[in-house]
Length: 173
Image (tube, rainbow, N blue to C red; front, side, top):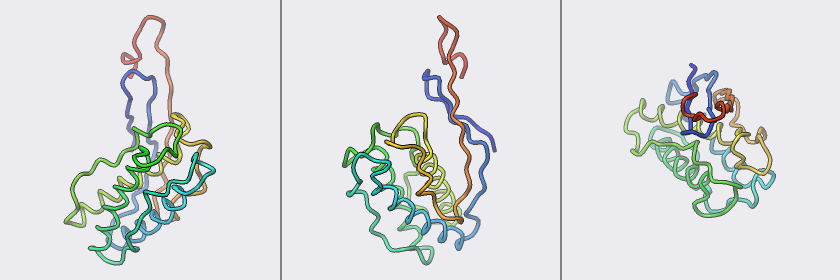
């Protein structure tokens, strides 16, 4: 899969080069969620990458064991991660991450919905900790807090371009 997202007129594009899907079954989703929970918890508290440890956006849900607990954990990870990346409660980042947002608004009621949400959380989390373009973190990238082997391997390339003098970057998006 190859796609690009462009921030209006900034001259930056985030291009996803490849992605291996992790969640194809409930068991895969449970393993991925639990690995992601561990990685996120370590990342948010890590002062190597943050000005201060983020203490208010901690995950309080237990590890996922079945569909119901997986939905609960996925919903909480979505909320806690989105609050963390925008520093809703603390100023742990150099800048708010307004790019790598989990956008799902409803709670999944089917396995397909859960798979979609978990994949989106993983995609956005990995992009957030690997970012070297926008400078959210005081050290980049955060390779220490990648989800365990059950999480997908995602490769992002950040491209920067400059329009010729007198022309808008939008013309080259």
